Image (cartoon, rainbow, N blue to C red):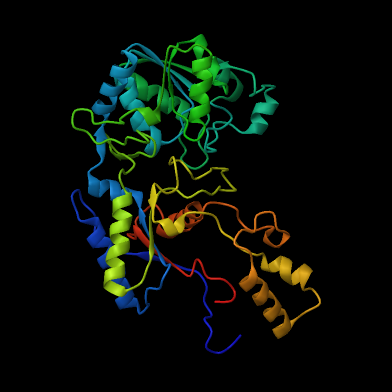
Amino acid sequence: MEQNERRVGTVSRGIRCPIIRRGDDLADIVTDSVLRAAGSEGFALRDRDVIAITESIVARAQGNYASVDDIAADVRAKFGGGTVGVIFPILSRNRFAILLRGIAKGCRKVVLMLSYPSDEVGNALVSLDAVDAAGINPYSDVLTLEQFRAAFGEVKHEFTGIDYVAYYTELVKSCGAEVEVVFANHARDILSYTDCVLACDIHSRARTKRLLKAAGAKIVYGLDELLTAPVNGSGYNEKYGLLGSNKSNEDQVKLFPRDCRALVLDIQQRVLDATGKHVEVMVYGDGAFKDPQGKIWELADPVCSPAYTDGLIGTPNELKLKYLADDKYKELSGDALREAISADIRAKQKDLVGQMGSEGTTPRQLTDLIASLCDLTSGSGDKGTPVVLVQGYFDNYTN
């Protein structure tokens, strides 16, 4: 490698920002924070750097919030205030518990149908081994609460220590509604209890609603169809409704941000005006990765990125260096190997789909990959870095 060549590839930096409040000029704050960080840390922006902003501060600046009572009013308007089947929610104090409070306040009775042995994103009610030991078939068996307790007793989440069955049951009761809990994995099973159904799954919601309607359900909505318009002046999200929301406090949720395209374009232009560099900009939420210990899939938002500039459209188009070194050029070493691999990279096709040289690379959307990197960089706690600058992501071995 030549002495003057770059020796660093992709770099991900958390950028500290002021605490964002409703009505703040987020484009100005993000641009200023990145430029100040560059000045204080001694790095320069380059073309195709990526500035990523967590969805939380975008929604906060928008003031995109709704209360439990707003949710209850929308549930009551859509379902009529009677019995509602609430099916396939995830097990989460942050993501779903406060939504369940609003749902319970908007109806007389909740029939809560939980998937088992785990929820959609991998939070386990029980282990699959325990289900096998009990002689239960999760693909066909519908369990009452009594049957579930008889088979598994009290079950607490591995990481949170919460018995979500008891937690959700008491939460509904505390809101003045009746509750019945069942455990099943087929959407149609809820129709034995009620024909008014709220589908609370995230990524499988379209199929769930289609199956319910085909099976004769009278009223079917998903979480993506609640709070799609303001209720009593609340926030809303016309595309995702309550999906992607997070608990703000005991009586309020922060919704997924809306209309983010203008924001990312504004920041892109501001950076161009200030530095002459054409950066890419995106808003990101959850990354798309799975915890090998708890088997939890991180992605509880409807998408990893609700808005991004055009340079982030598409998937990676990369050759696998390991394949080139170990197979195609296995007889070469040193400078000869480096030059051969570099020549292949420079000459690679614009679309490597199906080519052996790309085998083992990651065929995922760029926004999903970069959002995952940013989510891990910014964390979910007190790091204070809601903006992430990713440099060198689009470099390769020849740069």
